[in-house]
Picture 1 (cartoon, rainbow, N blue to C red):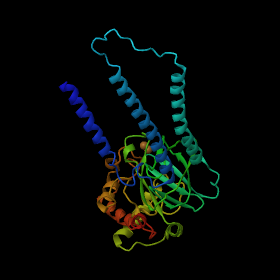
Picture 2: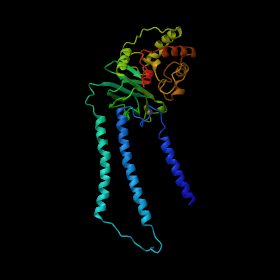
Picture 3: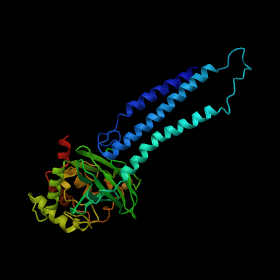
Length: 351
Ligand code: CUA
């Protein structure tokens, strides 16, 4: 009896714990705090399914308890056989029809949402961004606007944005839980989905397909700003002055080193063919390499030893490692690359 009570007590606390913990999770990284159309639709379906399941559980438990109490073996009736009900047509119909109805309740909104989220009728009139997953970073190509950027994707709030997704190497999966569901990126065929942010903000994205040793570090962000701010950002990005001379002597020297070595893979300004991340607005990035704070020290450490921060990345071994002094200068140059006043802070401060 004591062991049985212990189990019940453990189950009770486990249930309480799971309810409390379900409130955990970072804001802007939770499918339970939807800030995008796709995420909102998905959460609605989750709640419909949950309601049906809870309903079934409660009804079954009530019947189970009732039967357990009413038909338990009583003293002096050890040989009593209750009335047998097999072949009862009414019962058979009831427990066939009820599950069918419950499944219809789940299926109708699920199928409607599937078609809704796969609708591409206004793709040609909408903003289209080509997304490329790479080990272990994301590239965003705004084809019509002739803008390339990496890691932080800027979009206008309240507008449908079509993402045309591929991978340059292995399978990845694009997932911004508070904005929409996941979509795989494949090396061979393009997948398309649309997203729509309902509120301004910076939303955290994760790669959701095991893609190598730094899979868990393949983070990125969606920066949703007002349509006016988005237009401003587009203009600023289109009009980046590639000839601009940095203010400090250190950054100027860093620029010279960068142009002589780093530009072989990276790009400043529009350059769709660069194999490494586009660094046009590097100084405005939310994070360094997706996960580290964007500090001078971290940028220097990355340049000197990227393998330590992101094992398996493709920069390691493919460049001449500069001296620490040179790395400091390159970091000075990169961190002052801030072509627009529209930044992740703009999106955050508007909320
Ligand atoms: Cu890319 Cu996991």
